[in-house]
Length: 171
Image (cartoon, rainbow, N blue to C red; front, side):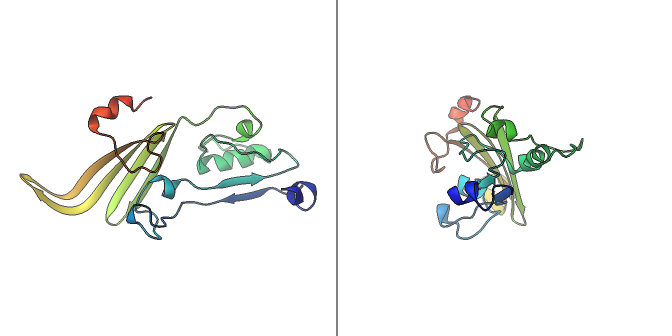
């Protein structure tokens, strides 16, 4: 921290991020990505270092990589494109600004499609598996599944909520 702020990089903007996490044994996934949307695969680092314009700090609020481009545009005083999505993180970095209420993730691969939506306390994952199933009268080539998690009580997403718990989704 001191080296960056006092000497070498005080006039440079340094960005460290990743486009996805990695499974390292969680839920029996090893070294894969794009196969699930659990926290270990979608939570990634986003580090901005620019001592000339803002001090070092940790922001606990969730942010999205989608917000990186608007942040850079504002920081570098570049014109905003009308089709640009996301929000600048500078107000949040400077100690104010709104936080993200919910986020959406998507993963598609040859055998399944997945999407998730997450708010501060809860997460829903929808999976559409390619799988020939035959359960009673139900015969299908694809099998849909919904998983709901209370992230405060179950941050590692080990125990999906029962459907009767869905009334709490908005809380």
